[in-house]
Length: 257
Image: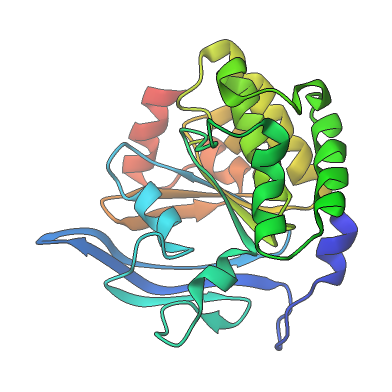
């Protein structure tokens, strides 16, 4: 996987930039959730988004692949402005993986079918190629024996690992995680985080909305604290957790650590 990312550079003066967000705003009616967020994400970054509930983290994440349409501002993915009306967003999303809280697996399809459906349907791989990759990915996460099972036969942690593998089957350039462990029992959290840590170590670019401060501290190379719709502090994990500058961040950390 790391080789793919190294080779798959985008064009432009700064080929390592994969996502650029410029003055992003999002309102729901009269309620402004995002109030002007700008940031740059480079290949290999693992960006953890932290902050209190309702601060705009998930809205920001979902704006990165236009699951939420920004009210104003720009999201550039590998140099393409996703907010442009001429962009085929479904085509772009093929390179932006997404892992949700609630797994979103098809209950009437086997695990193998869940993983191979998108790459085969979209013509990215033949059925044989997709199945070979699926078995390799399942073996990597220790669930090869579940290929013919259905989602209802799996634990929550197993379902989330399958959801991650399903995203990987599309060979994405970046994966967005929206609180991937929040729906899991505590004993299942570790098995999902370990897969995510392995992905990070292999070089996958990841943006993760998380309440798992240990993951943010140990795996991320950048942490962004969002509060009241803006970035109130963004820095390395060491700086965020050991020497936070923003008073609201200090208050937040005092409650969650």
